[in-house]
Amino acid sequence: MANTISRRLTLLQLVCSLQAFFISFSFGHPLPHPGHYPVSSLIPHYYAKSCPRAEQIVASVVQKAVMKETRMAASLLRLHFHDCFVKGCDASLLLDDSGSIVSEKRSNPNRNSARGFEVVDQIKSALEQACPKTVSCADILAISARDSVVLRGGLGWEVLLGRRDSKSASLSGSNNNIPAPNSTLQILTTKFKLQGLNEVDLVALSGSHTIGLSRCTSFRQRLYNQSGNGQPDFTLDKSYATQLKSGCPKSGGDNNLFPLDFVSPTKFDNYYFKNLLSGHGLLNTDEELFSKGQAKTRNTVKEYAENEELFLKQFALSMVKLGNIKPLTGSNGEIRVNCRKVNS
Image 1 (tube, rainbow, N blue to C red):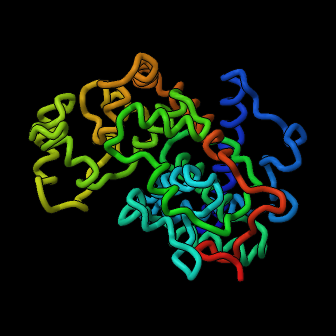
Image 2 (cartoon, rainbow, N blue to C red; image 1 turned 135 degrees about the horizontal axis):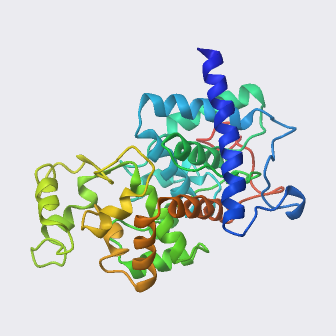
């Protein structure tokens, strides 16, 4: 059994490396070699000497977690996104409440929603045994996101590493920077641009909703009172709306779960975009990209619905951009021993 898992992990790493190579060159933007990065920047294979098995250790824990619960892939991917949109990719999201810290886990986007923290704990514990005080929690989130996508059928990418961990959190930043599920396209575009991400990145990264589940409270407005007039969202397919109402009443059932992609909810593919074309987007932020979108986002949705390979490649590229948002490097921050608290 152990040998089988080891072979799978080795294959996963090989696939990710090969996919990253072909993705970069097919888009005409090859990933630079480590020597092309400034000293303080993120680089591939950052732990090659200090913790050579780091990525394999992460992959092992992630694989076991996703095999146990398929939904965990989406949960780990979401943690990386919610972390990077607040103060950069610095693992501030992972910090629990303490005397000086008000946890981002309390924010509206994360409360009763963000999950997977126990898996991160398991990864960190395994890494601390192998390479004490070496691999950051921020890098754990970045690697876990990539591995989660690959395990559900998406393309891999070479994760740039070398992030360090924040010594603080920002509850206000979490509440203000992460788009709410009822955001308009203008709000979405603005919040993504503030992070250095464009409309193509917005549409591609929204494609992460091809896996995972959402709570009734996140889309109830679309079913019953989209514009404050007691009417449902006219862009929502009527039969689909009826199906959703059966499990998401006007009141109660806030935590009832529904697949973000009702066709292939556990496979990382392009059905999310096909669903948008037919009025089957679950969240308002999903449907905004197409039904109420500008020409740029509408056309991109159509392209991804027609060409799965195009979507998967761009998603990988946009994830690299996401992971590069304001990382702490060099002597900034720290390498936490426990991802839930700053070092004493």
